Length: 190
Image 1 (cartoon, helix red, strand yellow):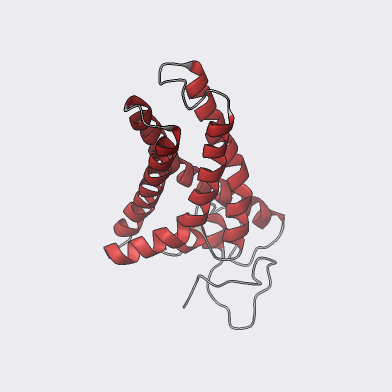
Image 2 (cartoon, helix red, strand yellow):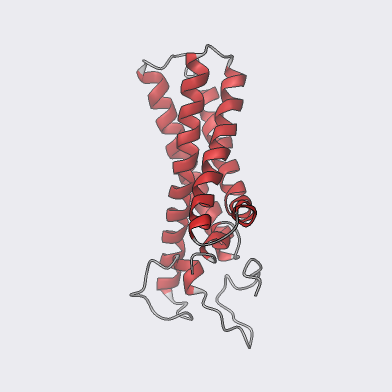
């Protein structure tokens, strides 16, 4: 069964014959205390936000590793701001995808299948995070040129990642509610 197209299911409607469990997608399997698979009351909305936060934290981890590593390497090497941003973005995607692929490989998928799931699960989330994060870093006067030993650099980077997280949570919630984004990865954990 194709679990990636749940258009129309975000409102809780289930066509006749739909027997798969949406609870695993909306809660990520972390909320067994809630009702059954068709419990779409207030608890479902709470679980959806919780799942979006968990998915965004997962994405933020990979993005932050790549972003910090790219900023550190680029700044230490004396690269121009544009090259530092490009390196940081590239590494954020690499580490973001790698974290998801690791979980998919553990779930028994082949390398090719794991890559396909990671691309579907993380691309939009990482893209949104990177746009916000790098826009803030470039917009803060002197942040990109401040150097690794300054409070300005690290405070700007921390703020940019926090803002990227806040902006990306509702994007991930919207995608998960439609069976996309991290819902694709959650489908393979069960």
